[in-house]
Amino acid sequence: MTEEKLALEIRHVTKRFPGVLANDDVSFELRKGEIHALLGENGAGKSTLMNVVYGLYAPDEGEFLINNKQVEINGPHDAINYGIGMVHQHFMLVPVFSVTENMILGSEVTKGTSLDLKRARREILEISEAYGLEVDPDAIVEDIPVGVQQRVEILKALYRKANILVLDEPTAVLTPQEAEDLFQVMRQLTEKGVSIIFITHKLKEILKVADRVTVMRRGKVVGHTSPSETDQQGLATMMVGRDVLLEVEKAPAKPAEIVLEISNLTIKDERGVSAVKDISFEVRSGEILGIAGVQGNGQTELAEAITGLRGVDAGTTTLLGETIPFEKPRYLVEHGLGHVPEDRHKHGLVLPYSLADNMVLCTYYQKPFAGKTLIRNEQAVLKNAEGLMTRFDVRAPGIDVAASTLSGGNQQKVIVGREFSRGIKVLVANQPTRGLDVGSIEYIHKEIIKMRDEGVGVLVFSAELDEILSLSDRIAVMFRGEIVTIVDAKDATREKLGLWMAGSHPDTV
Image (cartoon, rainbow, N blue to C red):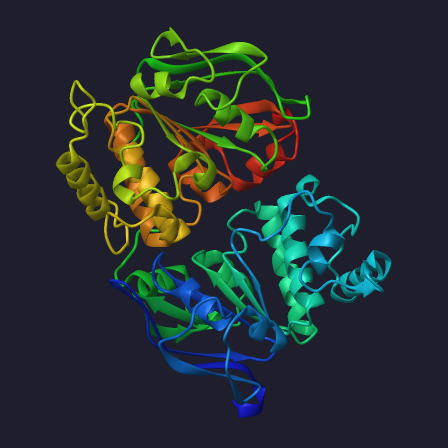
């Protein structure tokens, strides 16, 4: 390895926050034209390190070299000038702006005193063609699929002449097909000389697309490897520091009475188009029903309707034998329904609130957190938070910090801990392990199985086919707002599910 081939070198970077050593003497090398995966548990320090590189945080110690020259990065503007682009897990796009307007935001092309959108549009098309990233420059961002929005984020960085690209959990919001498209794009970029840092916790993706891997744990670099030298189990052990069960172990289900029944449910989306069409199914106590399907086939609307977040146009939902009123989340909470929402920021947390407050969002007015006069029992609230943080391995400086300060994975653990600890009878879990590392996924899967074995009826929505196949006792497949089949999990395969998800009739499989 010659020095000339290094695009970026990080030397002995340390970053502290109050009560947290986020990066502890971290060194890292990125070669030109490679995909270098940065792997680690939630809270391992991956995103912090990259935020330091991008100038969002100032390091307490350490230095950076770009193309073998030492540089000072005092903010994102410096990083961009040095050719560093970053695509965040949560996109930084203005939904009502066009692709072109989003691309040039902050780097506006002018003609006299006005924006030269024609020139900008032309340049965007040239970059798009050069890198094989097809986008419509005139499309409004909120109207295009998530996978295309991500392309816009990547193109935005390339438009600013980035040759070092940081992708922070880029597949967290993508369907399997969109993820495959992204990997192809990443390879195309490296062939054009772009160097990529790929932050992820998904082991299969690393083995598929990365050239090298650096593993972090609790703020430190604990090892380096490459896909040719290891496998999923080896990566998992490096990341967590112990052996991890990658396969879900469970006894056969013992389904009993029906606890959730959906009858002829029809739901229209915000545009007035039927997103869910006359769906019927039931969930029994002691079983897990998985809902499989490519994102955008009605799963979001169905989950929101069942959990009281969306009205319906026809049909009924019966919970524990009672027909439930729609758009009444508190009624559902009080009648034994637990909910892990798809969008943790919108429906799962109040981000400015403390962890302690977020952990009693559904029960703050009930004993032991409040008495008859609704006076808050502060001691009970704090004790509850401390217990859940320990049980679910929520990594934070303390229970009084705002939920907004946590990593996405730790935010998810807060929600899961709150919902799993409420003594529920039915659980609706929508993408329950999205953004979580392999160790956390293992724990949450075990907890879901435990709940099933204790008689809870579980409905799981997941874009991860492996998760659906490993957790479910029965699997329902959604396509264009309809359930095309419901099968026993033991009779399902990835191939069969893929065909059903694409609209093939079960009889043709």
